Length: 602
Image (cartoon, rainbow, N blue to C red; front, side):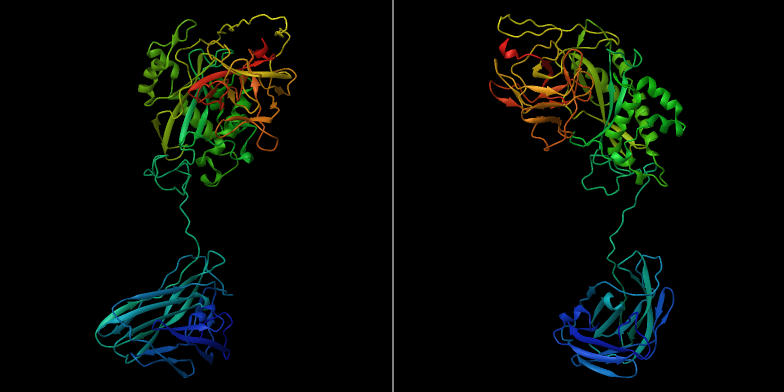
């Protein structure tokens, strides 16, 4: 049968190649690269006698090539106009095995296409044969032609023409062209074999995208899946570990005296690492206006009382929390909102954070266990965990700074989206950040600053009240988080803690003239930074990484992101070095104290 092409017209000369491959008659356009598969080729030249009739989506032809096949002889191809071509047929391998071959190459057609993307067949051709049969299906989309043949050990006695409607997917768009393709059926003696025509599509399957506001109930719990979840609108990933974090700020006091305050809602990775600032295009700088425009004035009022920083404005703090953490939550991605409008996801983030915070009344839970803020009583981790674990359902992270508790992190896995999913408490994956005993100071109380004495020496420089921390050049010393006494050894120029007494420290230089606000740090090794994923402190040549901004407390302690917490995996032996990490609890917690003088000479 002449190949159906967009250019076929009455009287057109059509050149084709026929051959037998594996006992199956194949007919190709002469330009089809698949002709290279033919061991022997027969060129067919014919004239199309009847023009195809086209419509916007259907091509119909009445030209039928009738194929009569017999065992051990030849295959007769009857072309339009009555021309018969005899081609040797290989039929000695006939058996009860059914073989299907499908070949797909790009289709080029100028016919109009419909919006359907499915591949279907509107009819099934039944072939009646005797004894045993082999059914073979060849789909050649390059010729927009489907050839179906059925052979048996008994030659066919008659032929009948019919047509099968096929949706042929386009390779350049998500549309298909419907063609009416002739199918030849044979009527013989006993058994029947069903043969259907089909085409293949190269388009990749698409997953169902759920709305983050309406998710199925049978999705796996975050961090528990064993295979990748394609749709992350209802499955938080990679940050499947959700943390609701709280502050206890005493000096200055933040929030009511009988309540902890909101720090944020964080999407940590399942191993405790995290991503940050994932979408700069959505780091909005008008959170208050966004909430007011969405009708969430009551939410904003609550945040102005319970979600405030210990320095700076609430607006800046909220912008930081949304930009750093909210933009990294997959279920808040814009595609997870049908008919998305800009900033639509922002109120959901703050509403969920506050909603979750209200279910975690830390102050009340501690008070119920007899743990109240005090300037004289010290508590320990066992007491805090015993009070909080039964209420939350899991062990939270408890963080301390300068010998007093000031932060809690409650961990969850989630089933569904962050907005509407089910929160399941889980234990902290971060090592506890408090010493063996610590204070739980009342808000408004300022603890006394620890003082240290040094031996006098006429040759040694001494610190004076005029020396301002973090101005110009100074030295950094790991110190005890409770007493602030200097520990063994300074911080090196590479950002590591080196153990030993009397070691010459590396010089650290800030770009601050007042010691307040944020500043950069530099050593002779280069600019210093804290890795956003591992929290590792390091200093290296310019261009090898981002430069971090630090700040300092009024009593000369180095801070990063508002926290004085630093740590190391162990205390370094003499002249040995260990890595220093910021903001995460390591086995050896400490603070880093700035000194304007070299203490090794004191």
